[in-house]
Image 1 (tube, helix red, strand yellow):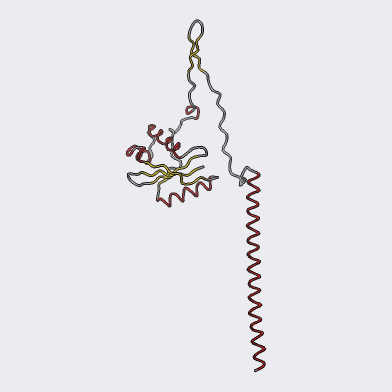
Image 2 (cartoon, helix red, strand yellow):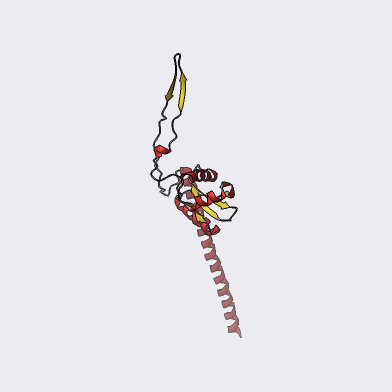
Length: 190
């Protein structure tokens, strides 16, 4: 998942948007541009009509692993640029079905000995996979092991630092007690 910015070079106004994995910021901006013709009422569409697509600069802000991280990056981008949000912007008319959005099969002429026949072939469509909800797992055993090893190394480093701090405090206490002992013995001699 990605977070991107669209900066209007005419007004210096910044918009923050998101896209799913495999979709570049430029491709997502093209989707938004194509949706202008649908007449959907949104302030960004009005700005896009007024200034044109050439007035906008597309930049990647962050690439993230999960939705929570994506929300955090969107908030950070909104705060950083004092921007407006494109999250949830509609690029299809409401009530449009997925079947209506699917590409239409093309007619292919097929020549036979007696006449030309136009045959329409329907492509078999597969159901879109349900989006998985994050469970805290990475989906990769090697990556899980690397994360766990990193956590263990960090715990060991913290424990070592704590032990060193305790030892340093003990050494300092020994020096203080030794200094007090040496002062006390010299006082008795006077």
